[in-house]
Image (cartoon, rainbow, N blue to C red):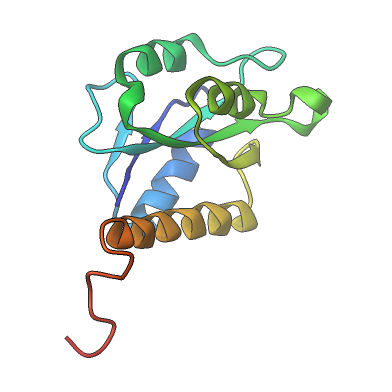
Length: 139
């Protein structure tokens, strides 16, 4: 399973990351911290009129190898620039946009991210053999 790495200006992204991480028991780190312990889902905010925060850019320059997907926060009032940081990062690093959050996100946003993380875990289990390496029966 992935770890979560976040960058938060107002606390919206931090709270969202903490909630998702707690639900799945995932390790959580900040972009201002050290390198991620494992491949990771990046959660960040959109700065200004649709830009990637400089702190997120610095982190990605040093640690992009583990990036597997991106979630970005923004505000609907920015129209086409809403959560644009996700689009920019996805295009630059070739990863999927997992979700775009209006401010702190909704319960539906949380479920969407949880679903993606669970699907990623199954994909990792089946990556080598094409079949799960776990037994779904009674273990």
